[in-house]
Image 1: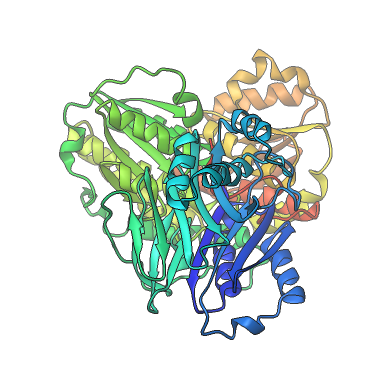
Image 2: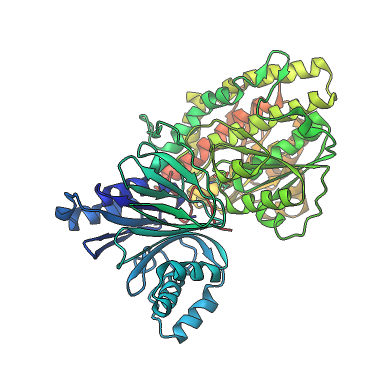
Length: 605
Ligand code: M6R
């Protein structure tokens, strides 16, 4: 988590750092800070909360007389998602030692031992962060060796965990030390002579650079106006030429805009892949499925829900045994991995630390792998054997919406692709699946009456002691997704549950204060889910049915359109639960796009 930026050059350093941090705000917004070194003097700004707070502070306090420059200055900046220590100014980066500053993304796992050792050696700590040990460790070595380069190398040698680091020292006004291990970091040559930039992802660099290195783990180096040196060979590449800034385009929130965009972006996700007689993925070789007896999917959060949905589809359509794992669980369970398993990771960002590490584990065990990602050039796309991009476009809302719908469509297509390659699907069945896929953009359209209904329901569904989203088959992962959406932006307790499992315990909670959101598709197990909902209704739970079919016992009803494939119903219901969560969050006055305690990209385990 967290985003870091760095700059060396003659331009307005504070502006470049601030602009970069704004692009990285999705990585965390608990606090932000920058350190600028110019004329042998450090200027430091820190603020709790979003980048706008930092910007305000800088605008009030900092005039850049000295930066009407022909002078070189340098700076580092950070936007934080708190892991160690509360989101206070004291814990905000950059962290200072005696004469150097550091910004860090990741977690130093052995920071307690290091802190003890350094405290014993006389170093004074002011924050509760793990990061502060880095700058003290560096100074500890440098005080002995008087050699910053060797001291930086010795420092990173002692660090355990995941980190990308930028470090600057007062005595070297044109130098940034950097290291990448586990968390992403990109180094870029600026367009002007001698200019150097750093960022955690490529968006802050677009337009400012034509030559970048996406650093691999273990790469460290020193950047200055005269040279960028690395401890190993690196390959320089280019960036996309234009930055598509996500704008709200008249919507109240990015989340709302992204819900409305789903219909278009799934069309993009299908473009060139959905053919008249089947599915084609240029990105993968059909032989990837040769000798495969099992598919294992690994992901986190919403992406995990897309994976769980696809496990039903892979088994049903492609007849391949499929299991799904939460990446953080998978990593430490000592999984039995055999090379006849195809490993699929799903991630919007392509940077989620647990998913990335799971992918590396699978690769090390000799498994073939596919990454289903939204962000091209992200870490996962560079590790996996093949990548299928979901083409959702930039997703700014922390609560994933269009990432989920595009992932699910891509995975559905992948199931059909495998079915065809394996020769396990009759042609008329394939034809009807393709027909349904073509209808997906329609199913994801936001209808005014549905949006209005969710607005009205949000008045009522605010209090009570919790929500159950229930469904069966693929509607169970959809129920999980509905509950996650509601939790993360409304801060209300919600659970997703398999409808048939309620009677094995949770039904004990049923009373009028328990809101049940029942996903009741017409085309899949309707009678079964109906009985489950009747059981809840008999125990006085308040029921909101989402279904094309009216249901007498429901207290409230969101009527979806009739469709003749359950996946089309799935997408219609997805839109309804996304809107309902959003409207409840609006009603509660929460920050819909940047809910508390969360970050868009989770690059710590
Ligand atoms: O970038 P990823 O898809 O790997 O992210 C995984 C989760 O952190 C993410 O899906 C999270 O659960 C969403 N913000 C939920 O809306």
